[in-house]
Image (tube, rainbow, N blue to C red; front, side, top):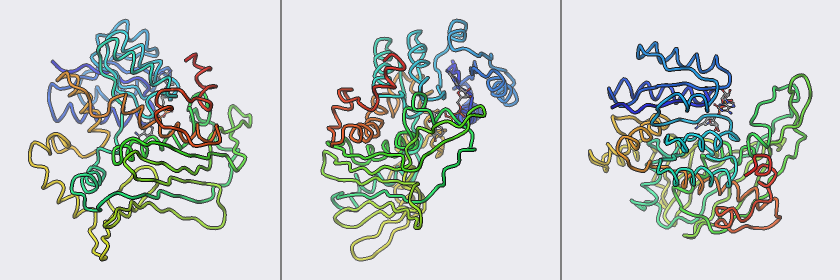
Amino acid sequence: MAIKVAIIGCGGMAGGHLNSYLRIWETVPGKVELTAMCDPVKERAENFANKVKDVTGKKPVVYDDTDKMLSKENLDGADICSPHAYHHINAVKCLDVGVNVIVEKPIGVTVKATHAIIEAAKRNGKIAATAENIRRMPSRRTSYWLMNEKKMLGDMRMFFAQHASYRAPNPSANWHWRLDLMLGGGGMVMDSGAHYCDTIHYLFGDPDTIYGRVSQLEDQKVTKNGEIVKDDQEDTWASTINFKQGTVGLWTCTWAAPGHSFNQVVYYGSEGCLLDSGDIFHGPFDGAKVIMKDGTEYPMPQLIEEFMNSLGEAGKNKLFPHGFTDGVLLECYDFVDAIENNRPPEVTAEMGLRAKSICESIYESSACGQAVKYEEVVAGKINKYQKPIDDCWEL
Ligand SMILES: NC(=O)c1ccc[n+]([C@@H]2O[C@H](COP(=O)([O-])OP(=O)(O)OC[C@H]3O[C@@H](n4cnc5c(N)ncnc54)[C@H](O)[C@@H]3O)[C@@H](O)[C@H]2O)c1
């Protein structure tokens, strides 16, 4: 029987999820059926449903309200791509009627919101997955392998992921939910930053202590319904992340640095380094390379080939089923396959919480003016920064 899936929140990112389920439908007949599409802006759900009909010949039912959908449909899974503040609200509703969920990063809007999702999954015996696409791609899997299995770089000592550039404030730009602290939960530390914190958690494990300083140095404003309003997102952060196994990372970013721009992402071990080629959020990228102590260089495509050859058929099928290498396709496939085979997904809500708590530790450290213990943030014991958001959503 095909796994019946609904998409909740049919906006930008959900389009990638929709295409992925359609690709699964085409590649593995009978694995998944897109049953319903739900968005408070009904035309968006309608557009998604029409796309499904064009490919499969069967149109999912269209809803503008999650409760209405859950009362009518007999779903196996819901894929939640709403604004961050509505992640836990939608997820808990689904889980409480026995529907498994995959929730876009950064899972809950706060640590408490994420705990609410985890608890709902536990009390109902259902799956709560975090939609994390970045770590699943070949260059990221290869980076994990070369650092943690092949141990090509020796003992991992430190990393630097640093960006500086200047973006002039643009008050005429349109407001978006991301720019409102209550809806977004934070700025890029936890938006695109959720990906990077998942990657460093994947590569280096749990942090011990984190120090962060976060600010908005330029006066950021945007236009909402003709009015100039505040953009709540930070434009600058500097953080030091001390991992329990000894690695230390400096993750810093500013878009308030006029005059000179730079971008540098590099991971150092005792024998050499992995020099990345791209931004401070989504790598290590295909253009990265390893440089050993003696100067020998290994470009990422060569390392990917070696990694793939080391996997064997079973390993390849586990990480890249049906030859899929796109991260969003792989996360959607993992969700459907986990429901079908009654197994945990790779990136559970608990793992989403651990990645997200690195981001929240940076905010909490900045709010408290001192380094914080990561585990205390994971447990929800430190929430000075998150408290107004928790209060807003009665968490
Ligand atoms: N993995 C990635 O690379 C990636 C990239 C972009 C966005 N995202 C994540 O995807 C999610 C959605 O972001 P987006 O950029 O697609 O935003 P978006 O604004 O394009 O889409 C959000 C959609 O949710 C709908 N919505 C609003 N309130 C809702 C509610 N209460 N219940 C259900 N739906 C509601 C909106 O009408 C809209 O269609 C976020 O969690 C974001 O962080 C992930």
